[in-house]
Amino acid sequence: MNLLTAQSPKLKTNIMPKNPVQIINECRKSGEPTFTIRAKDRASVVALEAYFLMVQEAGSNPEFAEEIRHIANEFHLWQSKNQETTRMPD
Image (cartoon, rainbow, N blue to C red; front, side):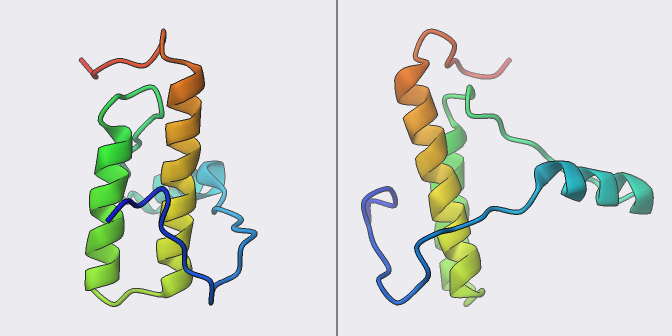
């Protein structure tokens, strides 16, 4: 499956991802650990694709899966325009 080109016509098309600052602030207040993957990480799109497949297989909310697909696509587009700053994490 190619996550970036697959389509789910039954779901809304204007995906509004959750606010990452709000999520991090909520986690800080509650002490919940959080993990951030940046688009400049060359492995980020593959990681998001794997997460998308796991979310789908687990039967999660289809709109949440679409949000993951949208984010992966944004990462892919950013990487294609910023190849000079895209690298493997260290």
